Image 1: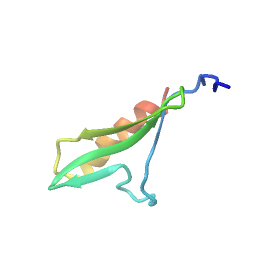
Image 2 (image 1 turned 30 degrees about the vertical axis):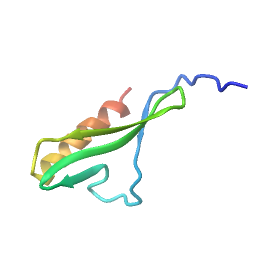
Image 3 (image 1 turned 135 degrees about the vertical axis):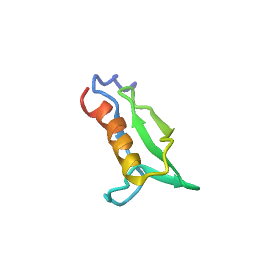
Image 4 (image 1 turned 180 degrees about the vertical axis):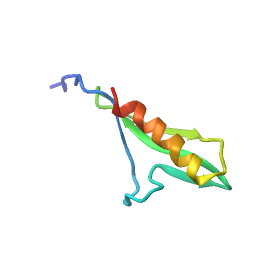
Length: 74
């Protein structure tokens, strides 16, 4: 039996167990990265890594929030 394709939008999840202010963020030798998993309507998932091109934590949080908001408003 095949699973019917969902009509829902992709969502982002995370592997971290904390809800802290740096969820989805990773500092790699001073440069901040966004790490997340996008769950697609067809049941598949894709890990996403985006270099935020900043060493500033506050700016990294703003850029992360912008990435997440793209998926929240669909």
